[in-house]
Length: 341
Image 1 (cartoon, rainbow, N blue to C red):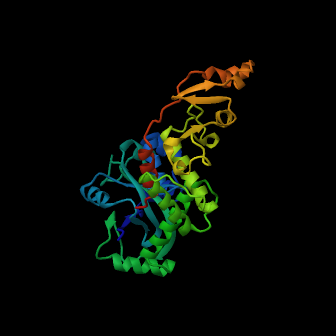
Image 2: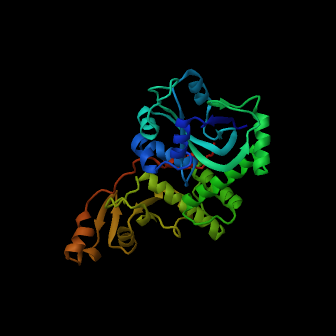
Image 3: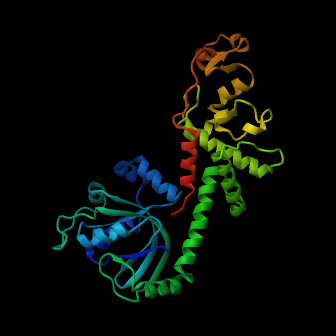
């Protein structure tokens, strides 16, 4: 069962900060600036797209105790002047003094003078409640005995229990994750797609790379999309030959072709990540890969232009770039991405 918390924003300072980071989202660029790309990617693994909001608590003993109980996937209600205003889902936490000061400054009131709201948590907006609270709140609260009353208020406002809301929200998040992973605009049958995706990931994890010709077109496309995501992670999003690092322009090529070897169709180690030029050059026989090195064929050596030298001939004898991570590590990253807490 997910936990439920309340934060209050009724005093003048809190009302000011509420407008800054609850009524308005935080720019993604600020999260990256203060907390880094890795932390931002973790937030986006939990919440693939949409505005991110934030709140925080000062470093007082009770605040820290409650913040430590908060987990990704729990829910928080914004309370203001006797009303339950908004429902949020926690997508990440960070203890960061400088980021908190940048967003909210430091306290000016007697009980928080000089303190900042450094115990931060990042939020996905779920719904507006705008309903009178069944009980008054002050400060941060972990709902235990009062939870039943608050959950009844949620049902009154939204017509659904928190568990129903959580289930629906996780289903929508999974759809978004699958859309991003498989590079499609809209998943039409998410349950079937998730089933196929899980089956293919399990096959690759178990080193079963065989794809029979009887697979449906949809399932083949899902397998190819997952294979591409594995290769992007294995090679750090760069072409194995020239190092082009624009993911949308990179393609997967099979060393033993899809038609030639059905038992290695899903084998990441039977694939390379190439830019369109070098993919086409390999397919058309202008280059070969021999013992991990690039060999320009006589077909390519007929051309002496500066462009041919720059984009093709200069790679003669160069080593194909090695993966930066194993396919097992890449696959694990994909599995973690598809996990919803």
